Length: 87
Image (cartoon, rainbow, N blue to C red; front, side, top):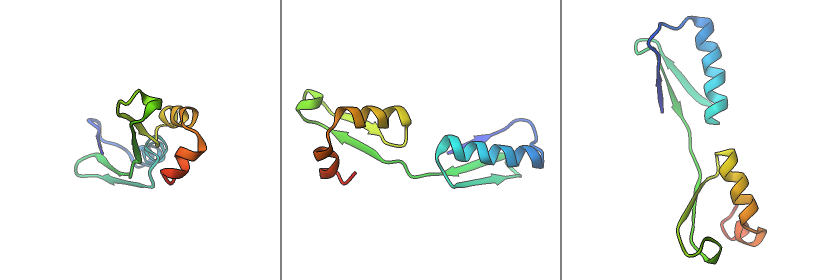
């Protein structure tokens, strides 16, 4: 994911944005590119797709890196399903 900024960032602002981007993206790999005045954020996201009687036999996708979706996943599925999925 890349974040571009129109206004030239200062060294202090870059340091603040690195911390902020790491937090909001749940990533350790944030690189500032001065020539582009942008940040490149690399992260791996875990998605789980489920289709069973719990989901009325419709595919449901959960982004386990999103706190709200993770909470929903945890509430909907019991421990045996989580174990089957290796979670």
